[in-house]
Image (cartoon, rainbow, N blue to C red; front, side):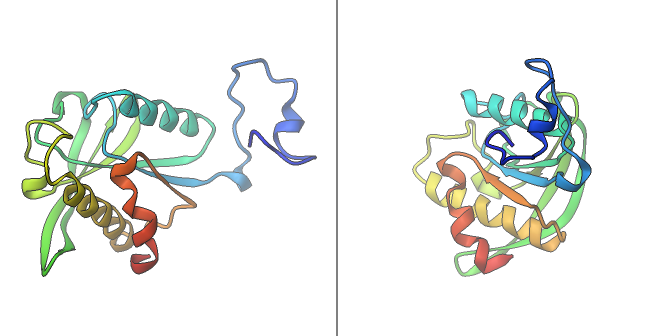
Length: 178
């Protein structure tokens, strides 16, 4: 709502103090899903994880519904995830000439940001998040998993916010799945 047209919500709150969070009116609230290879504080390499956490919390403060979808790496800091539980038992996803069953776990990070972590077999059982010869295949598969999860759980976000090149395949695959 930064570049708001005349008569819009932000202009009606021009008296808000600098840095003050002004909630979005109910009729303009959105459901936003962020698909990302990182989320702080549990799966973080550089600044992307921090951006996901900060942006997600700010969008929630403004009244939007926000969920994050991230791979469930074996190298994550599980001790920094609250209320981690299995959310979806058998997420069947195509992978080359076969179908693989993965699981989706849900938890909260950073004081309430909901994250759905998707298992990925050999693709997520690694000592690090990036830097492998098959990163293209790993993150293409994750992109497909994220879309399959949204489809099979009837999630219909207003915005799918893809972060970094690892989730670049999401927009290209979107029309095939949703």
